Image (cartoon, rainbow, N blue to C red):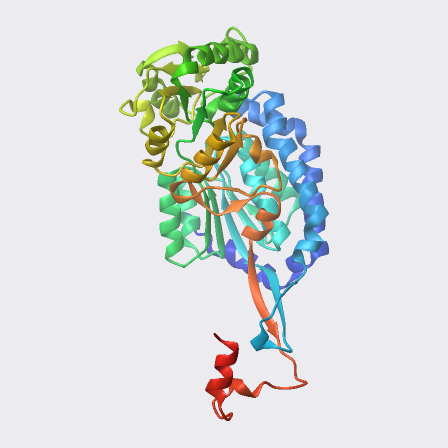
Length: 456
């Protein structure tokens, strides 16, 4: 197992020089990163095609375009974000001024997953750079072409003492986690998230964990079924369901279930065609291990749509399963594939109880025109974030911090949230020297009485 102490020390030495704290240096680095992404656009699309069979449309939408917009937004606001913020002082602190200074942590370790191997490595890096940190990126070994291209792009254009990419498998992550860094940002599964947090605890290293879970999608009896079907099909099957915020399962009101399933089947057909596997445009499953795990779910319930699969191309059709209960195997863990189980309900409160009895999900989606139903669900169920009458789209807004709660994650990023995640807020009180407040000292006559006047 390789030792990464030298690399981390090299970055720490560079950080202490103070260059990364210069806003001009950060802006220049972000601008360089943006240019790099644009220059390597076709190479990135080719790598994502090789690793996951992503179409150019999906690759640009979910891995490239979203990052260009994130960098543009960050560069537009960065100078304002980095300035000390003046806050109020209390009456007892008369004569003083209070400020919050955002400052970088130092060396940040970013461990990225395979499902969006470029976007989920670079998005946190944007925040790390913006906040003034050095960074070490550990991309996924399950997407080797994208990881190799990422390494080439970074190593050719950034000094390793500032930003470095370390390729390798789980052993590499373990070796990196043994070293003391100043911040850890991890995107991945709940079981691995627990390992990351345990490793971080040994050095009391702060962490952001972007995990997952079973995200519900609720279609109420008054929903616009045509829009619901198309938006759910898009959100579920983009990237072959290998999206942490994809609708993991559905709760559909009994009264509209059959009509909705018909609309859903039609929407899938419109979006993905007659035979998605042979078309060559549908994202494949990342590995044989994941493929085999997913195909075991295909025997659950009744297959309403899809179900076809091909081991040689690691492809599974967009699939809908009906007549599902919580006892089925497909309902035990996050699916992370193009299989959508459908449960039904006729009692809203009982359905909410079923959802809240499970770990808090990363996302939740509600399709209804009824504000009372919307509010009841929003106030009753704790989840990371989500949409009303849409799926997944909340991720595209830099004004909406993205993250989980409970088992679905710790911390949130995107937009200003990315800057804040990688910044420590240092609180400073600047006291006047024009006068002194005597009541704070115990030697003052009637000091306690005077203190009580201010502290009630």
